[in-house]
Image (cartoon, rainbow, N blue to C red; front, side, top):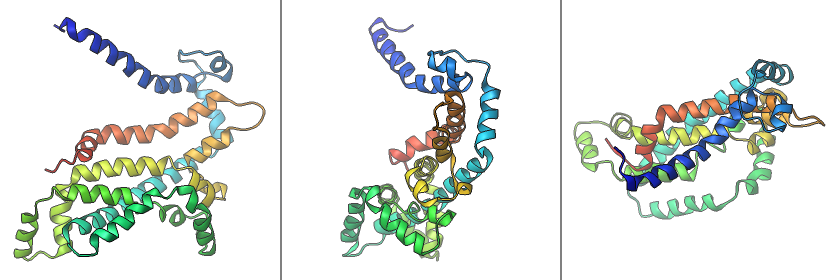
Length: 268
C-alpha cells in the first residue's frame, strides 16, 4: 500500500514523466499521420506510416544516409574511446612536473566554441584533400578534452597496487592497460561510448561544412534536406526523425546501467 503522504510525490513524478515522454509519443504519432492531420493537432496514430516511408525513400537516399551515419558514429566512437582512454590513463598514472600544466592547457580548449574553429579546419581539410571523406569527419571528434578528463577522473579510482603487481609479474605498460585497466573500467567505457556515439550520430554543423557531396550525407543532414519548398510534409519528416532517433535510443537502453555507473565513477 502506498502511504498517503507519498501520493503527491507520485502524482508529481507521473506528471513530469508524461511531459518528458510526450515528444517521443508525438513523434511516433506524427510519423503515422499525413501533414493535414498533423497540422490539425491529431495525437492518435494514423494509417499513413507506409505512405510516409515511401515518400521518404523516394525523395531521399535513406539507406545511404543510415549507412553513412553508422560508419561515422561507430568509427568515431571506437577511435575516440581508444585515444581518450589512453590519454586519460597516462595523465593520471604517469607523473611528471609538466603534466598538470599540459592538462590545464588541454582543458582550455573546452572553452573555445566549435564555430570559431570551423573556417580554419575547413581550409586545412580542403588543402589536405579530406573533403567528403570519413577521415575528414573523424579527425575533429576522435579526441576531446571532455572525454580525456572523464577517463582521467575515473582512472583515479583504479588501484595503483594492481599496476605495481602487474609490473612485478613482467607485464609491460601496454599489457597492463589492455589486460588490467580496460576490463576494470568497463562502466566508464560504456558511458563514454554512449556520449560519443550520440554526439557523432547527431552531428550536423561539421558534416554540413565538410560533406559537400550528397553521397556523404548522414541522417541529420537528410532530415534537414527534407525541409524546404512551399509544402512541408511533416509526416515524412517525422518518419525520418523516427529512423534517426531509434539507433541512439537503442544504444542508450542497452547501456543505461553501465552509463549510470560510469558517470558516477564506479569501478569493479
